[in-house]
Length: 170
Figure 1 (tube, rainbow, N blue to C red):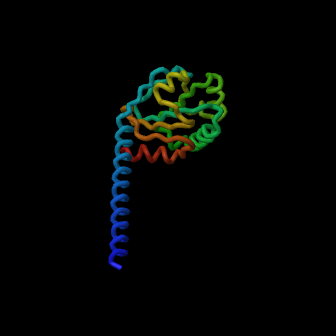
Figure 2: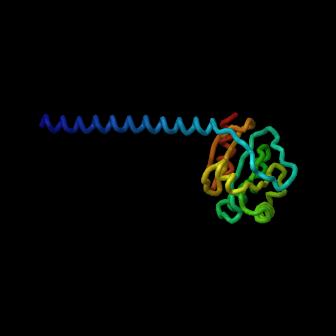
Figure 3: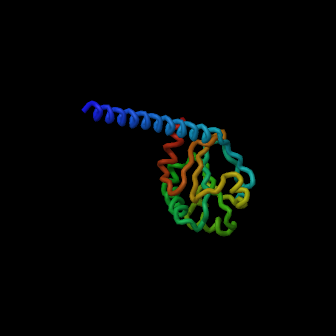
């Protein structure tokens, strides 16, 4: 009977130690990822805006890496258009490597070309791969006004999630 209790006690101790070690590793990885995100600073090089008035105004901004034929990108465009009033204090730059005509058709078909704080840009595919890696579309990158990455989303993203990330930075 004592041996049975000892066996269960050892199993419990091993389980507890394993759980604690796993949690410690998890927390360290999460801390490291957050630090890496904070250290990434934006460099808007190698992009060609589709309109001439393209200066970033010194306020927080959002990059959307997208492809015009991507269903999730189209859904995100609809969501951002619907919530455009909430996002008016945020510069939003949609960047694609697709041809410029397709980018312009995308912006026009979703009404995004009528919103003053939204811009579209073309980036060569090699430059996009070099700067952002092999991204999935859509990818949203939230930057503060100094160009430091705050948060990254991959896939369909609700505008409220974007607003919440910027509100946490204040």
